[in-house]
Length: 350
Image (cartoon, rainbow, N blue to C red; front, side, top):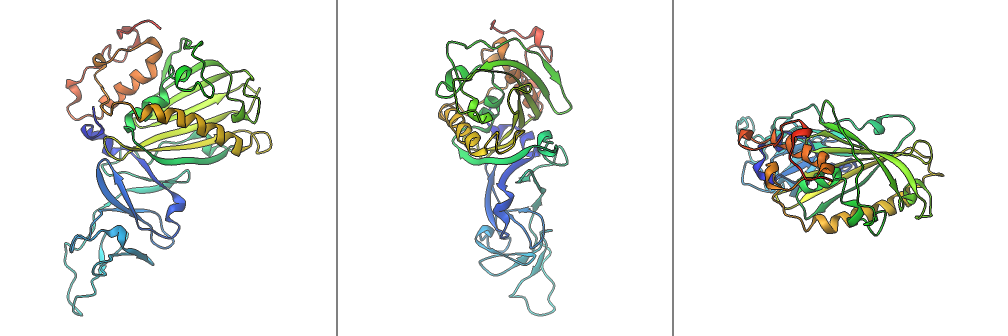
């Protein structure tokens, strides 16, 4: 299924810019779920998302400017408040009331974790899901990237949760095709989705903990979590043998074929023992390996579990599909084989 076919995606929160991008107020052109919008911020205020065109003669509002607390159209100088109400039309004679239709449609927008988040439907929640590590003392939090990928947002989310691709996709960093097996694991239900704890033994990840020797082998537990239908969290636990780190990942659907891949990282170690520059350089290599493959995947993402072959190690990605089914209008026609009981799902061994 294409993202445009999942009506409930409009009700989710998506990161569309860094909060610093609005330091000057904007406005910025935004595209989400195939439609354009404009993002701006009044002086001293929070972000505002509105319709992209002026209701007067259709000028692109992103080509305008922000003056104090108002968004000003570049075409005829109409001025709009954060509420969307027009506050000034220069061409009107004194005393003439403003037209009632001189108003912009606005959408919810908030700032969290160094990013601007918006919702263009009816928000399913009050804001983006909580990223626990970013709110706990002792963690260093950084927006790693927010960049356009020529891939479906659903494929990116799927890859974040997938357990069997690293052996092959990440051969240049920590993957080992001679060790493709994924240890057995179970899913635990959470308020927003699910979590799985997966034991791993890996090499090639040393630079993410400040260890230059990529041949060093580590035992760790990968804590994989679907926070809500479109946001993921991964925590790598090293049980004190090295500093932990966590990734908060999401994919903002620009259209069916493109997405903004968004990632925030949290590092438990100090800058001296876990230098961010080393962490980032190695992490960047890993995500580039993902990008090469994901930009060559089919944007049609089947939610009907009978349309693909699934393995036992695919529990996390199977459950993502089941979760997304709930966002489809008239989803009763989609088959989620085995219901919510993983033991009854017909899959191949492995």
